[in-house]
Amino acid sequence: MKIKDQDGNGIKIIGDPTVEINAIPYTPFELEEASHHYKLPISDKVSVRVNGWQTGVGGDDAWGGQHAHTEYRLGTHQNYSYRFTIEGL
Image (cartoon, rainbow, N blue to C red; front, side):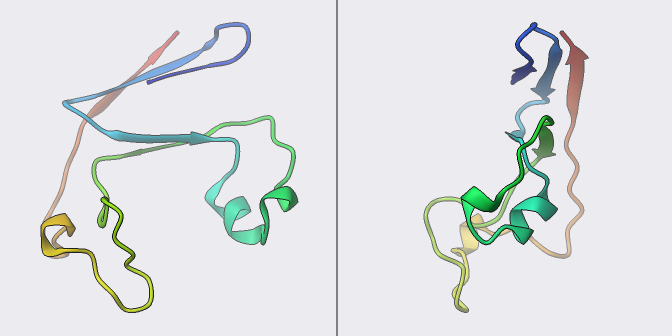
């Protein structure tokens, strides 16, 4: 994934072999604090998160006491590792 500004400056993130990347103009704290999207602050930054995996992908609703299907859960007593490279553009 490439993340660039209007002048073409930025970074490229490469998973080894793959990663999940989220790049948005808000921090997790700002998202939690805003009760509606129009209450989010004007932003001049990008918050980037690089994850190896996530539990519950595939449309299941794990809220309200339900759990993701077993095949989509990450084990809580396992060690996980993943690799990625960040390059300047």
